[in-house]
Length: 314
Image (tube, rainbow, N blue to C red; front, side, top):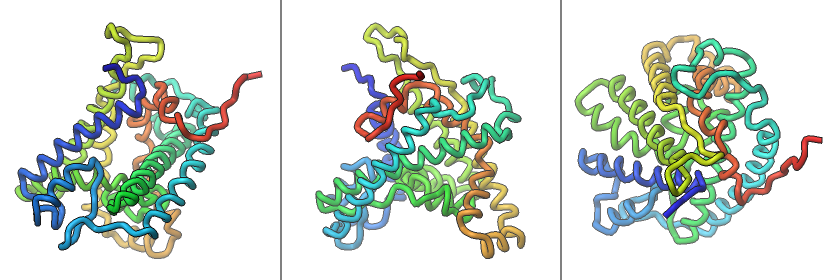
């Protein structure tokens, strides 16, 4: 059957990769705590593409307080996302259009350090954060109605991270983080250094996202040809973005304990510290977001959200 909506394609591709990493964590013996306590726990864990919480008694049950909290946050973020998307849509998701092409060979390192590109990248990174946060609250609301608690998706990484490792390890997309940690990092770390393990994890994440591009932007015409809205992604850019971040993690391992960084974390407002952390990767964000910005991905993603759309340029 033919699926054209790119968000649905994205979710289908994500579920396939989720299955792969869950097989990896099971093979190497790094399943989450209490999942192996019983067959029912194992079935429950693998039945959901997201991660349920477990304790010694089995899946942790949700309460009506959880249901209410997730519902309120979900509705709030639906309107936040709609408002933010409406503004970004008015500028075609690039307030400062760039000339850089979509292919890997088109990357110009100097472009990422221009103030125009830095603004574009911060705005798009924030948009991805809002999308994932909204999706997370929605999934948490639905599953809490079914009586289950899930781990959170996002914990405001762009504006509350104290370090690069805090950003990627404790705040950004915690569902995927958990899969990569147990399915890649821990197996590699059991035999090699933490730098080798973190590098392998970021490369795996890059390959994971390249795979998603191949699913999301697969030809949407029945005969395999390219329709007017078809888009050919620039493979390799996602992986390069994650390699850059693995270098940042390596630098944190090497110099993150220096007095200057400790003083910053201790005395500066957390929002300022977090933006300084985000700025280390900000010049490369468009390596990751470029294909989503320049295609019709966000047009498909906006279906169902309250949007204000400009009907004419006059």
